[in-house]
Length: 611
Image 1 (cartoon, rainbow, N blue to C red):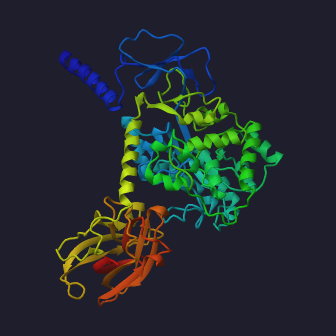
Image 2: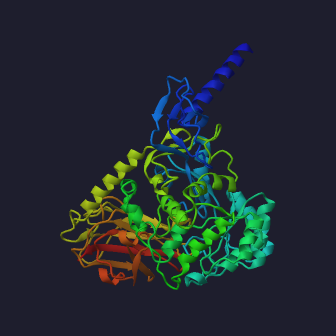
Image 3: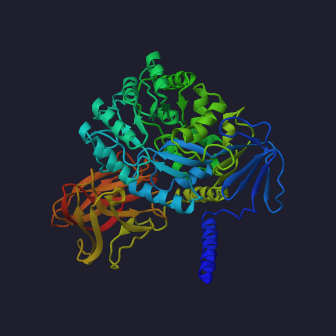
């Protein structure tokens, strides 16, 4: 019995040591001491204290003298300001975006619409290991929208609701998927010149009521004053945009104050909605530019098509934010990355700048990205520099209380007391820029234009990186495809590429096919502008198929042409200019794909060449 107890005690200590190691947290004797530093504690500057001690991933002490910890790492903060890690209260997380977020001082994000399975996996990892190399994620999962409503246009097949009696089951399903809070769309798109369906007032109110019954916050996407009024009257905890159609009236302001609701204005994305790429100035800031990934740079310089968006809209956006703030309404900083004009992590710094333009003081803007969102979303262990809180911290040169852009001059970022490897991202950007310069030259092997004739019996290409299967499964769809080399091909050819599979219409815009990457790695741009178009031979089952071009300048929005492949081999040619005017200078991918109608398909390809 004694031996068993000893073994259990030893096992207990081993497990705890392993857990601390997994979290990347040092032994408590190896503390981090940041001293001689100005401290913004999430609420105010603490003039009388200048030392913060980090132990075991938490803030151990905030004091005015150096502790007697000789084995610790001491960091001199002279001329610097220490802040809680920043919070971006409105993002959409797809892909590997949380590591770049941390590099820019964002240690926590609130996602407003993403794939539940992906969000669940990320949260599982951050719970089990701390995920110290990336920002923490909290997520609404699938948003609540009407059939044909905002959120259904992206091709992702999502559940919708149009009946208040369905609210209980709908909210229950979202919570079962892991939603941390409920995000509702109440917007018909008319203020942007778009036509969406939207929920009626009764369904809006029912969803909010059911969220509250399950102790979940309910936040509402709006764009017009009357929609905002309906949402607050229905009991919404917060609005995840500010309306821009006209100025707020006093009755609305009083309503928000009375209900203690919060606002996430998302000024950055609304500036871009007015035709001004809000993130372009970030690329001109030498404190930020070296850390901005190449694939995010184009998006930062992009704005939404203006359409019917009135010239006065962004003025209204700033003015409404100012009036609500002056009335005492809680304002939270959120970028709505990765919409046009934004990028994950870096755009929070533009949002802070715009909040100051809207009338918040720099101190109040900093609160909007630290203590205020932590309090609004019920996180009682972050957003402040207090003993016992998480050691999610941002150290910057200068004083952001005097100049809000000082948040951009980052010295170090810690999550759970582990310092982010910002140098790694900087080196990655340098490599990307070097690769991009190399990509300006035509890829080796392009001269005769041949991509693939499959005569060696393999799925290979004369240049570029590879062929790969491409289906809507990457977006949650169920379409399938197989690629294989088969005997028999176009005239005077021995082999061809056979694509066979099935289109499943459970996805809004299903696809399945094969993708060729002309760059030296997948989705890296290749300069094909020495050629004028693409030719290929095809035969198939009589379906209409598509050939799609992805380009760096258009991001993830492809341009395409259609062709019908019958049971006899036929040669097709498409000029680059027929793909909405592209010139071939920055092609990242070429896809041959089947689409609707649902069902099996077969397509054979041969002698694929650029001419």
